[in-house]
Structure formats: structure tokens, C-alpha cells
Amino acid sequence: MPAGLVTRRDLRARNLSPGRNVGPVAILRCKLCATRPDWSCRHPTRGFLLRLDLAVPKRVPTLAQEWALDRAMAARSTCPQCRRRYEFCLPLRTQGVCDPCDKGYDPTPWHLYHSPGQPCSPPEPRGPPPMNTTASTDPTTSTEPATTTKNLDAGCADVAAEIARTDQKGSLLLAFDGAVLAGLASLADKDFALSAQIIGGAAGLTLAAAAVLLLLVVRPRLGGRTPVPGTFPYWARMDAAAIQASASADTRAARIEALSTSAYAKYKRLERAVDTILVALALLLAAAVLAVIG
Image (cartoon, rainbow, N blue to C red; front, side, top):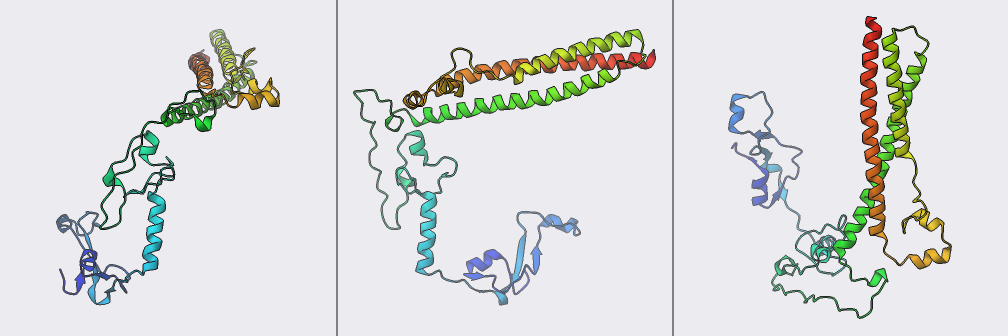
């Protein structure tokens, strides 16, 4: 290595910072670069060389800066539910709590944060919740596992998203089907061969059948005479007092069942509509070939 030049690792070992170095003076390249000097080195072992005379000693943080950094790290590594602080950052944005609180187990003692020189004390025992002699319908005092609640919420959201996706696909395919039917209608007065006209008419009927299937996909379903509890058709038949009284019941499982049935029926009709459109396109292709030939 040239005299007066050091890498960043050497600067850290000497307790120095780059200081007035604007950028690397040279790059310490790998052995493979000897065969390709015109190429830029991307090897992980490459090193950026800095001037040692421009380096300055590292700044020592004050106690106020260290305290501010410790508070910032505490906010990212402390569970808001059990108030335990860990040695690592918690997934608070996605999960909201630590894994032991989310999945219901005791944390490993050496994963908890403790001050330097202080032994890590085990957490307080977390026994099973007390048994309730009377059933409670209050969601705030429910002993239902957190995993079940999380899965029910995720199931409701997933099924609702699938229904919205089928409606969007059905609307796009319905627009495409209508455009093709409009094109066939504009060619109805043309003088084509009889075989081409027959096959084109069959293609038009097939597209009309696909349009009927797509209309059934996007057709709203209001639950019939007995709507599912927890849905807006069910609430539309109740007054404010009845809605307030039924708000304490957990209807997520019934909603998932009803919405899943509706989503499955929509997907089956969408599948039949796509197959019908493919058959219609094949017939149109045959009719076009016969029109050109004949």
C-alpha cells in the first residue's frame, strides 16, 4: 500500500475520521482487475484509500448525545404492551408488539436489555389467564387468543380483496367483450362468404353468452331474505338500537364464510366467461380466414 494512504478500516483502528478527505484518492482493487484494467472494480474486497494527513480525530459524543441516542433506541426496542426492552429493534410498524406478546410465550432472558455490569434478571412469570366463571361478550375482556383474532381479521380483509379483484376483472372483460361485439355489428352488412357469416354469427352468440356470465360476476348480491350478520344488508334492516345491541357479537367467522362462498361463485363464473371468450376468438379467427379465402 502506498505510504500516506490508508483505508477506512485503518482509520477506525487509529480512532480517526476521514476529516478533510473529500473522496477516495485511489481504489485498492482485487487481483482479478489485473487482467481487465479498463473495467470498474465491483469486488467486495476492494478498498478506498484516503490521505492520512487529512484525517482528524473522532469526535467524542457528549453525555446528552449519548442519552438522546439511548432514548431513540429504547423507543425502537421497547414493547408498548409488556414494557420490556430488548437488545434488538422490534417490528413495531408491522406487528405492533414483541413476539412473546404476539404469540403468547415468555421471552428468552438473554434477549432482554440490561445495563452494562448488571446481570440479566428473568422476566416475571406469565401464568395462564384466570378462568372466568361467566361468559363475557365484551371484546375488550375476551380471552380469545391473539392469533385467532389476527387470523380472523386477515381472513375478512383477504376475502373482501378477492371480491373486489373479481369485480375489477369482470368489468375489464365486459368492456373488451362489448368492444368486440360492436366490431362484429359494424361488419354485419358486409358481403362475406356464407360459411364465414355462419361462423361469425356463432362467435357473436358466444360473446353474448360470455357477456351474460360477466354480468353475473359484477351483479351485486344483497344476501337474499336472510343476510349475513355483520354486513350492511343485515344492518339496513335494523334500527339504531338493534345495531348497537348486535355490535358486541363477533360475526367475523360468519362474514368469512359468506364472503368466501360469494368470491368462489364469482371466480367460477369468471373462469367460464374467459373460456367462452377464448372460444369466440377462435371462431372469429376461423371466420376471418374463410372471409379472406372465399
